[in-house]
Amino acid sequence: MKNLIRPVLVLFVVLTVIAGGIYPIAVTAIGHMAFPHQASGSLIEHNGKAVGSALIGQQFDAPYYFWGRLSATTPNPYNAQNSGGSNLGPTNPALADEIKGRIDALKAAGTDMSQPVPVDLVTSSASGLDPEISPAAAAYQTARVAKARGLTTDQVTELVARSTSGRQFGIFGEARVNVLKLNLALDDLKPMHG
Image (cartoon, rainbow, N blue to C red; front, side):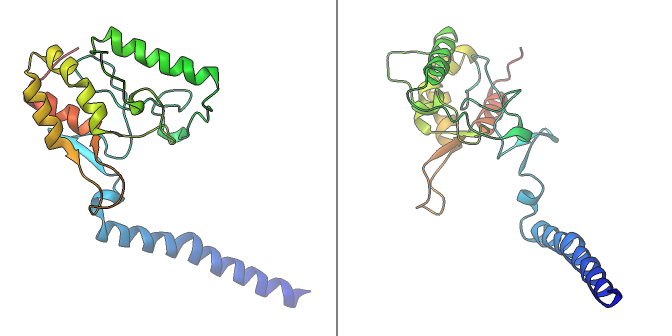
């Protein structure tokens, strides 16, 4: 029996050191060398201060900011520790209530409701943390943001165009706008307080 226990314990210790120590340290070091920005959380700095991550959405609900996708995380919106979608099906009344609530919020903020609302402005993302919206969702909000900030629609439209990222490598995904980066660019153009 002693002959069996000793090799098992040695193997356990060796594998623990390799899998629980050496491997994670090596992968972290390689990640920081090859992709330092991403390995550090893809943090966005503004005026020398970290204000968020390019990969995690934040809540914006003031009329003078662009709004991102709704968050289904609980207990608080955009809770990165509890990522997940609402899993509400198209026939679920709670989904219809969520969409109606967001449309009402858009109306109350002064958004022109004469055009169809882009779906990504009224539904949650699968992660509940989506930091980006479609160019159509950004364009939909341009007049409201311009009016609230005292800017021309052309100024805000130009800012949206500069903030739009195309498909990754020209073929993957869709064009998108990072809401935090866009709102920071707005603040640089004309700061708002409130």
